[in-house]
Image (tube, rainbow, N blue to C red; front, side, top):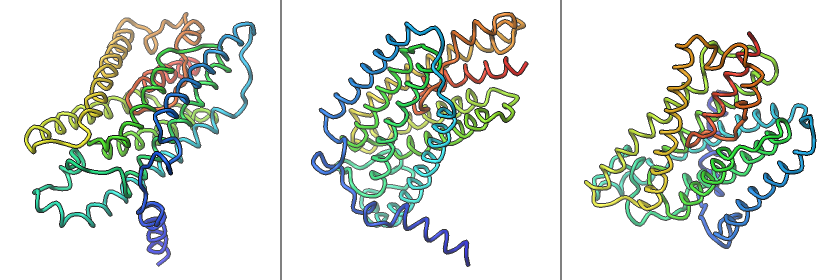
Length: 320
C-alpha cells in the first residue's frame, strides 16, 4: 500500500503535475530561452573561466575548495537521476495519451523515440524535462571553476564541451529535435552513475578495479551511434523527422567526440601493453597528475568522460 502510494506520488510530481503537462517552450515565459541569453551566458562562462585562470597564474598553490567537488558530484548525481526518472515517466505518459494519433501515420513508440513527426512543437511533458536538462547544463559549468581553483589549469576541451553541449540542449528545444528523448535518457542515466561514483571516491571510498568511467562512455557512444543510424533511416523512409537540421549538428559533434575518445581509449590500452600503470609510467605519477587530472562537468557527448577516465586513472595510481 505504501509502495503504491509512493509510486503514485512520484508519477504525479514527475509526469502529471500541471506545470509539467502544460509546459511550453516560449521566448517570453521560459527563463534562458532566447538566443541572446544563450550567447551572453556562454560568452560570460568563457570569459570568467579565462579571467580566473589568468588571476591564479600568479598563485603558486591551488586554492583549497574543501568538500565543494564532492557536494557538486552528489548534486549532479541526484539531479541526473531525477531527470532520468521524470523523462522516462513522461515518455510513458505521452505514449499512452497520443498512441491513437500515431495510428494514422503508422508510428510506433520506438519510432517516436527516434523520430518526432514533422510539425512537433516544444510543449508537454518530455519537453519540460528537456528544459530541465538544458538548465542543468549551467550547473555542469560550475565544475570548470572548481577545476581551475584546484589545479590552476584551463582545459580547452572542457570549455568547448560545456559551451557546445549547452548550445545543443538549447537547439533540442528551439527546433523540437528528434532523438532528444533517448539522448536525455541515456545521458542522465550515465551521469547519475558517473557522478555517483565520483562522490563515492571523493569521500574516500575504494575506486573500481576497472576503468568505470571509460566503460560507461563506450556504452553511451555505442548506443548513440546506433540511434543516429536509426534516426537517419527513419528520416529517409518515413518522409522526414522534425528538427533534422539540429540533429545534423548534433551528429557532427558526436562524430568528433567519438574520434577523440577512441584515440584516448587506444592510447590507454597501448600504454597498458607497454607495461605502464593506466597508460602512465609508475615513475611519472606526479607528472600525469599535473597533466591529465582534469575533472569534468558532464557526459552527454564525451569530452568530459575522456577527462573523467583520465582522473580515474590517476586516482588508481595514487592508491598504488
